[in-house]
Amino acid sequence: MKDLFFMGGPGFMGVLTLLLVITTAWIIYHFIIGYNSKQTNQEKLLRKIDYGKSMGLFAMVTGIFGQLIGFYFAFSAMEQAADISPTMVFGGIKASMITTLYGIIIYLFSFILWFVASTIIEKKLKN
Image (cartoon, rainbow, N blue to C red):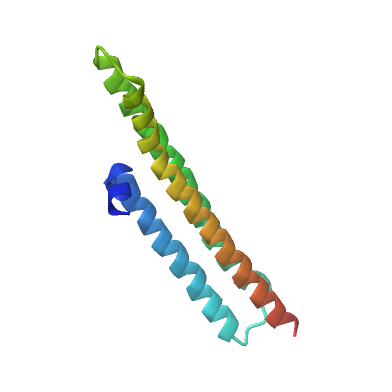
């Protein structure tokens, strides 16, 4: 796992990990506040939990941006080199996809957390 982190580039992978922690903490915090609250303002509670899903989407876009930056630097290196093997090209493409996959996983995780939290709060407030 540590190898994938460094292969994907510590800069973008660090930012994505930070977004994962912030997104998870945001959704869980607002779920706990909303679940334990006597407040009946359902729209406000659900909107705050929706922000967590938006942060997950931002993580996915950041992962895609990391891949594009990786492509740029890989193609720049290929342009400078005289002889490029297909193995080297595919290895570069594989490494650049790590940030995108990580961003998509973060988005899916935030989407699942959002779905579970909003469903539970909606059921609680209806009763």
